Image 1 (cartoon, rainbow, N blue to C red):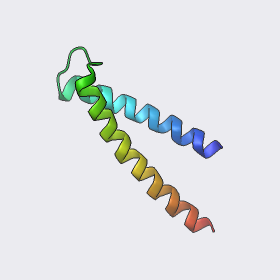
Image 2: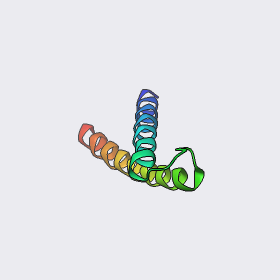
Image 3: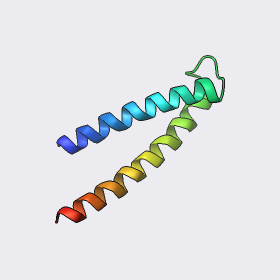
Image 4: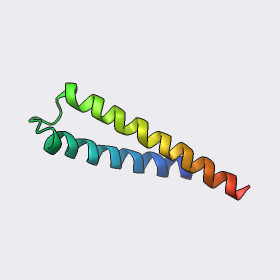
Amino acid sequence: MLQFLTVLLSLSAAVAVVGLLGVRFALAQVPIWEPTKLIPIVGMLLGNAISGVAIGSNHCLSQVV
């Protein structure tokens, strides 16, 4: 349960910060909450982050057992 909460919190914080900064400064979108730009960016970030967490967790757990 602790691992789930840690991963959830870290993914949420990282995707929120990188997504909002990317939409605001890289895409120069004002307001930053425009769904046509924010949703695809956050989706791509989450997809890549979840893949990385799955691979990392699998490797760490295989080393323990």
